[in-house]
Length: 179
Ligand code: PRP
Image 1: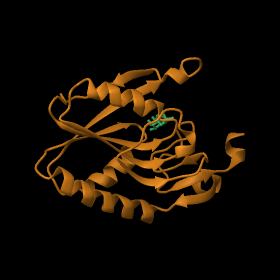
Image 2 (image 1 turned 120 degrees about the vertical axis):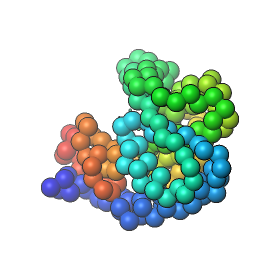
Image 3 (image 1 turned 135 degrees about the horizontal axis):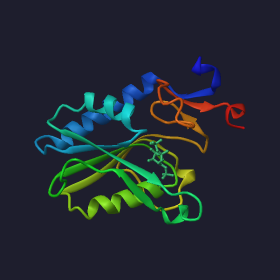
Image 4 (image 1 turned 45 degrees about the vertical axis):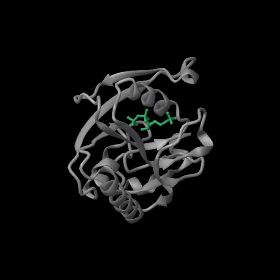
């Protein structure tokens, strides 16, 4: 049913799982014996984070943060409100932020500064998707699974008006759905 609204499958479920497995192996090496905190940024990161941590064979903790960005007038300043803060104290901890997509980079730019103020032992950023053509501020992930073109994509956590997050793949939405 949801498939009918998709113009093209950009990244299949199998490709996502394979990428998560590969990245999981890298993170297993990097965070062995560091007891890191993997922080999912709600809501979009949930399916990717769930898949990724299956492939990390090391002790780790999970936590979540929800932020809302203020659009209209203040968007260019990247103003961000914390809707749900972390449960954990991240001072002196190894922290890995998990995102579904980096587009303008505004969210992550503010988040990164917010996290660094809390003095973690280290901070790295992981994203499922990177859309470099959308960038308004200079920021990059430490690990990115896929670079995508400047298209409106949904699925595997990414939404259009809160829908399509449950698609098991990344797809390009048909124009008629949002026009
Ligand atoms: C999405 C995504 C990132 C941000 C990326 O979240 O999860 O956090 O946008 O965009 P940017 O690089 O242009 O800032 P969104 O605010 O849509 O919330 P959601 O995860 O709940 O869908």
